[in-house]
Image 1: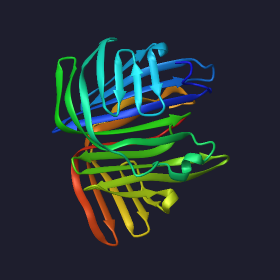
Image 2: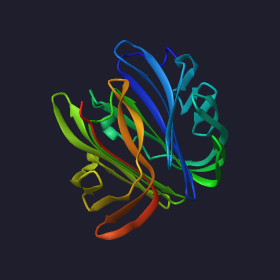
Image 3: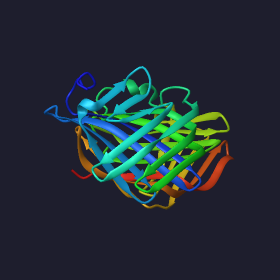
Amino acid sequence: MNHIIKKRSYFEGWYLKQQTGHKSIALIPSFHTDDDRQISARLQIITEDRSLVVTFPSITMDVKRNHFYVRMGNCIFSDKGCRLSIREQGVNLTGKLRYDSVVKPAYNIMGPFCLLPGMQCRHSIFSLNHRVDGKLILDEEDFLFQNGTGYIEGDRGQSFPDNYLWTQYNDDKTCIMLAAASIPVLKLSFCGCIGIVWLNGREYRIATYLGARVIYADKKKIVVKQKDSVLSVQLIKGTPHSLQAPVQGKMDRTIHESLACTVKYRFTRCGKVMYEAICPNASFEADIYHA
C-alpha cells in the first residue's frame, strides 16, 4: 500500500454502478491519507434504500496504474468485473459480476484541465456503458444481473468541490453524465462543467474547455449550453442516502446521493431534440459544503 500514496492530504476512489430492471447497486472502493499520512481504506455500498460502509486495513489494498484494477481485502474491482467477499462490520456481501462490451470515452473527460495545477479533484471515466452479468447477495437480498448495464468513474485529489452537482444515467444504448462544480485555482474560482451524452454509439461531449457554460443551476436543476447544444437536467423525485466524502484527504464530509431516482433529461443540437426522457433509474447528487 505504501507505494500508492506519495503525498499528504490525498484521496482516490472509484464508482461502479450496476443496474437491471428496477434493481441498482453502486460499489465505491477508496483510499485516503491525511496531513499526518494516516492511510485508510474503505468500501461504500449504496442501493435504492440504504447505504453501508466497510473499512479495511490499508495493507490489504492494491491498485494497478496501467489499467483499472483495485484489490481491497478479499474484494477485487476492475473493468473486467468484480468479486466480493465481505462478512464483517455488520455487512454480508458476496458474489461475482462480469463486465463485457466496455465503452470508453474518446479521450480524458478532463481534457486540458487534467494539466491544470492546484485542482481539488480530478475526474475519470473508465466505462460509459457495459454489460453486467452475475449475482451479488447483500445480507439476504439478491441482486441478479442478466444483460444489465454498468458505469465506472473515478475521482482523485484532496477534496470534493465545495459546491457541485452530478448526475448519471444508463440504459443499453444511452449514457448521460454531467458534473458542474466550483473550481478553485490559486486565489480565484470558476464554475466548470464536464459531461458526455452517448447515444447509439456516438459521443457528444459538453465541457468548459469546449466552450460550455452553465446558464441555470439550483439543487434540483441545471441547464448547460455549448454553442448550438443544450443539455438540461431536472430532478423529479429522489431518495437520497448518505455517503462519506473527502476533505483534505480525511473522510469528514457527508454528501447525499439518490442512486435510482427520477430525472428528466433533454438534449438538443441546433434546435433538434436528440434525446428527451423522464428516466426512473438515474443517479443524482447536489451538495453545498459548509466547513
